[in-house]
Length: 312
Image 1 (cartoon, rainbow, N blue to C red):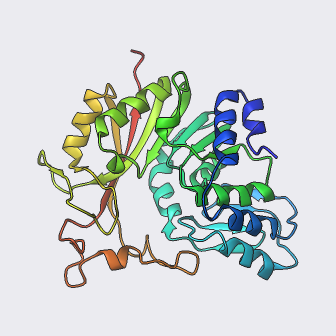
Image 2: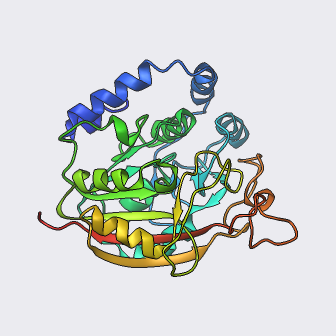
């Protein structure tokens, strides 16, 4: 059954078809295991509340242990927290903290939103909770798509979709979203300016881009280009100071910028849990000097910016 049919019906048939094609043609080695976990989920009566720190999907089930076991089979759960059929999923990230920092600046009522690097769709649920009409999330990591499918099985009517795509898969003419979110993506791109230019093309004139990324503390015109890993993360190509980031945005034609937040990431916000048992931020910091990563780089600081696209 095509889980993106409703997205096509909502006016995005090309995206819906592309997402379905990539999902049904996936050859990931864990795909059958994940699908079996979703199939093993007990029946959950619908009922959703998305305007809260831990979005609630489904009513409490009679057999929570079976549901918990099935959902644990979709490990690792990175973004949350979530309450699914009465089972609380304590994810690696306290994503509700990030949302609380940016929510006062957002106006999403009635909007169609694109969320790039959306993970399992947690932020899409929060967007619906403040009035968004439709959220299209894209993320190429298949286990996150499976987590969304598990949530979609519980609440199939929510207009929050997660497609197994990267930004490079979005075809020309995909734009015209009211708002485009790119959180935790820019530093993974080899060409950050090209990424920002893509964001501009995806949002309608007068729309807004919400950008969240790693930055270097301080006001100098500096750029960190890690050799090897950064805080044990692969593919971190570039971390600019806020000053450099603002220059990039201007060069990309995104000039009306509001800095919503700059915060140091702590092990209280990103940590290992029963739902994400791998090592997390604590193990990525120098144990003698937590202001540094284990590689000797400045510890993670993240900035969130709200950018309005002009009409040119």
